[in-house]
Image 1 (cartoon, rainbow, N blue to C red):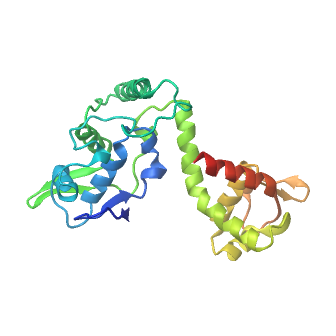
Image 2: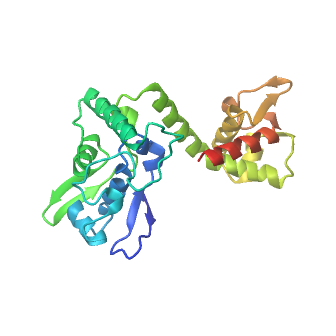
Image 3: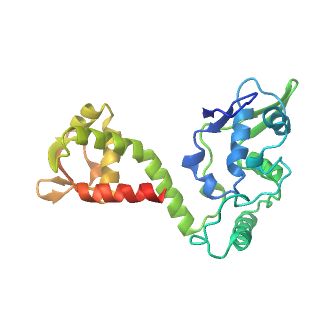
Length: 266
């Protein structure tokens, strides 16, 4: 469920939930959502029983700048010590913070949830939403997180722009490694402009299954990096049968320009 990340001089290793980035919660919650998820993910590891305050004390002697000090710190949407990007948010830090707070509060109120003031309040929302569970046992408090996190859109009404953004993030995170594998194979094959192939053949060549190759092709076509044709007619990459022959026509110039722009944007 988790990936481990070393922390300088820790008494315990912090663990981040694998589904955090794919779920999209970091684009919905205050900035403390990220370190709070790490803290709860670490508390969910075997061998820990106790409160989040106790874990914070064990790892950071009770004070963690990343979470705003302790669990009673107020939630914010920006890092106090970060250099402000006036090109991206010309209104300035305070005005941007107020705007984010207002939008976040309105979204939670509309869904019938209390608006958290502190990180501790936010942790209680995690329990309400099912992002985490807390059980009192004879030995102490036991924490857990589901293998797959509920999505923000399952619990809150998101605006159209944010919904589209989260859908795009989930799609690219799912297809990105698959596209990389397919492109690496094509590059090793000499960057062909066009090949006659099938999902079965590409799956065998890349050590993937046909469904993964189909997803990679669908992403390349959707991004304008490639065309899939059967005969002289365009074919729907998502509907290809594993055995069907098709022509994969690559637009390498578009591919390199497009992927470079994405990299710079990140």
